[in-house]
Image 1 (cartoon, rainbow, N blue to C red):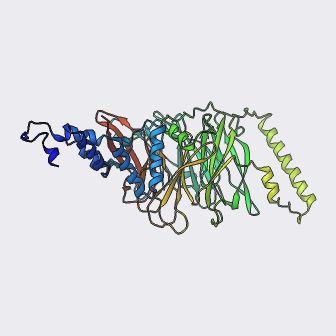
Image 2 (cartoon, rainbow, N blue to C red):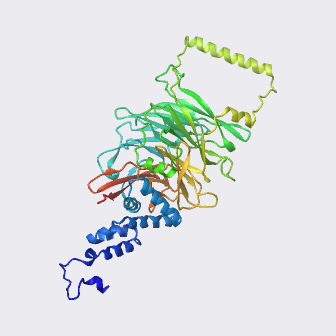
Image 3 (tube, rainbow, N blue to C red):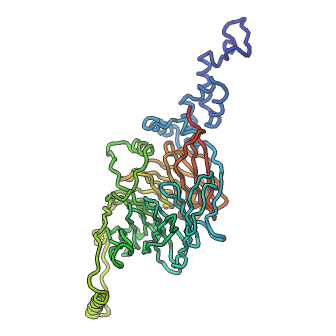
Length: 543
């Protein structure tokens, strides 16, 4: 130590003399070894001490050690954490420093939006693809559209002009379950449950600045409201038809409305049938354009790192081939009957069917339909009152259905699904006898699992929730009624401390970050109770 204090005996150290931390290379090496034991926040603070400490704090091994320690705190062993970080650095341009800072930067509550009427709660939320419009669905079946302006935090969002609200309660809706924007951000898909019945419906709402929110189309959909956009068209899973231990669900294509086709024809077309394992209904569904960039021999993590650095393709409506991903039951051993515990995917071609034109006058068509009904009644009289159509066996049903092209067992009940490009994010329960939730990240088209991260929580009855993802983060509400939302780094899977809210959270939205002079400003929108909480975090620019 005495050697480090003076270069030569007899030389007195003054305030103007260079520090040994700057002159002696051994001092920099010692600093780097010490800094490998610091967390990301302490490491960033140490870098502001002097130029020598700044050089030592910028060493990649120190930031890798900070990230590795965070991953090990999440339950990952030392070797697996190190392998993940080495692969991340090899296949991406994301540095360990930037990823560690994103995982530890504090999120601050910058505002709130009152999104539901008094006495009601938000049940669903959706952010449009341009991140300028936010749709909220309340427990009173009211849909509200908010638009983002130039303000910051909650002040940057304002309710749309007159007509920006629409209530579906007069149509018999009990509440809004899910919302999803069309790729062009001018139409909104809403699903919900009809009061005093087992019927579920979907509604297409037209959204514009001059005409507000208008109802365009209503149609039946299966339990849970599993539907999604295929460009300008719509794919929806119908109600299952039970048969024995299984059932059959029909995938419908909605390609037109009654405004563009003759009367009621040309609105819906059946595409294919899907077999319901363990008599489960398909409660969640995604429609994703079929990726054409998959390399079968490519490592799954390498492919994932490549995807998160690219902007997702725009679902413009010119595509014809899509993948429908849904949650199904019966894949996990010991799963409760009807519980959705796995993901499955099937490829479809969502072509627009040719328009059907009505032939003849209205009176002639009514008479033709009445003759068909009379012939059906005559056939029933010939069969007799005791005649019953035999129920098909399981093999016959499976032969009529399209088998999934890919399956992924999850081991927990699916709470929510979302996608970004070819990446699918599934929020699931932690499993039997465990509290909290997990998020599984998989790649299409083969549904290959890339990441699985856990969030601590309490044991509670699960409910539907909406996860979210962007280029840098993915996250999901805890699903246990505590109001916690966990956010992970997209590249490393490092989790930051959860965001706390006074009410259970049902949806999360992660808009793309905004670049500024101080760095990237990230925003998280969380729907909890009757409000939307706007969180922000600024990631400083790398020097």
